[in-house]
Image (cartoon, rainbow, N blue to C red):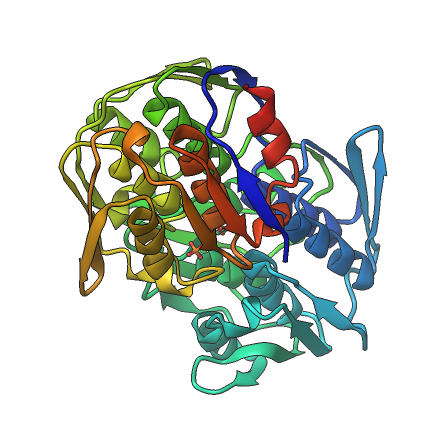
Length: 422
Ligand code: S3P
């Protein structure tokens, strides 16, 4: 475990280009591996999570190579095939859950394993629908934790499924399995989660309809094989959130974040920061953010589905005036770490009063990042907690972060990019 001393930064200026979207990167690799022929991917995330997906696609028979920053994937003519090797998903929940959907439709036995963090995360949420579709999915205990054994079959039974939690990963696992269904698969979700899978499946020729209901969406997918194509992965909004919060709470900052994906389910954090009074504006897909005086707000899980931006927004709440409420964010407990406890622990380490009630937690802000305490915190195996702690240290009075190398699962160059703004 690497401990990193992150100093306070007196002034922040410049532009940062965040990595390619992690969600889009996984899907580009998976859809390319499932397609026949040669696909190219521009802007793939360099993180270890996405590298795990690339390795696994190769184990299942695709060829994956990088040339001049472009990743070239060749999907086998007869499609992906089972291997007796373990499929190592490392720290990546997206890899394991979407992969479960893919291998459910590949005849044979598949063994999916992960690191200590991933092996604690619930896989019952994908096991349940995939079993209904005819695959056998076995893991440990009631939560069906990894290692997972999936016995795939083809065709799978097409189902009509209401996803019981807000999860793009569950929706996507079912849609990937539905590609080899014996009819149309339909998935309903409420609230709407990121539509990356639907959008990208449509882009590679899959016939899919998506109808929005008042607060949810129904997706109907016809079976089919993706077509090879050239993917361009946009910048990752969830990574941009760290620099947006940093720029807003730092006392002397003007930061530009180069273009990111602007899908509505991904950029809810911008609306939250605007509501808090942040000086943040869009310019052709880029974000400009400057030092601001923030007020507390109430943040609903539905405005930031997947709740990936809560650790960053907790730091904004810690620097705001008044009590911020994070409502309905219990899903944080089953992310790479317990981010519900972790976000509260970070705010407390900065000197804030925090408390929780059921699925909600509260932070009494200190009014300015200059009032943060310097801190020491361990955030093992959770990249987003590392980055949240790092922006708090940079804007406040410094901090010591244990487990800082976990940042490489999604953003290996994070600390270099942070340093480039100084
Ligand atoms: C992701 C979905 C989210 C998110 C994760 C990436 C995806 O999880 O936390 O970082 O790529 O589909 P949910 O399944 O909770 O939506």
